[in-house]
Length: 278
Image (tube, rainbow, N blue to C red; front, side, top):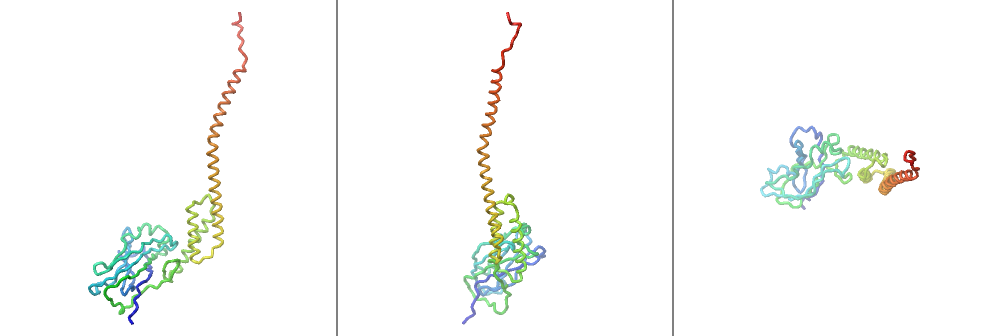
């Protein structure tokens, strides 16, 4: 019986000291999928981060080799999976003329450096999900051991076990931000703030946190926010109804003043002028 080929794999690449990398490009360690060695390939020095999947050591492969692969690439936001930069799954034939495929613009470097969560302690995390669909030509990868990055699942992302302290830090940052939001008065919170708080609570709950007390507080805050919005709407409606009444009142006051003036004139006695008496 032949060796079973592992055609599906999820790996994580942790790029350390990303902001101070000296080279224009950097490659991950090799990993084996579909009886073929692969690498992830990044270009961190342009205006945009480019990211590719490439076949490793393809120059030594026999003529006619091909690999049909389905893959996706993700830049992990360590504070919120909802903010991670994900490239949709795509399919590509890799061969001697086309040994790499990916994205020229994965994310602008300005966004990468200014958005909290992508770079934590100088580390950028890339997750690649790869499935080799078809194989043409046998490649011998048994002579060398390829260092596959073993990963564990954390909230839907495959990460290295050594990342757990960073993930805990990220969770705590989300928790502190959520607590800060819930301590604000309803009038200082927008609907986007409320939606973000709900998303953060779901994120933490799915990560295994027991946050019944925060969920209760969020429910109470949502109820207060709803009452505030209802009250503001009623006040606005009443003010809209009052505006024409105020205008009518002012018009009526002006008419009353005019009528009083005419009344005073009508009540005034006739003037007596003795010189006109014959």
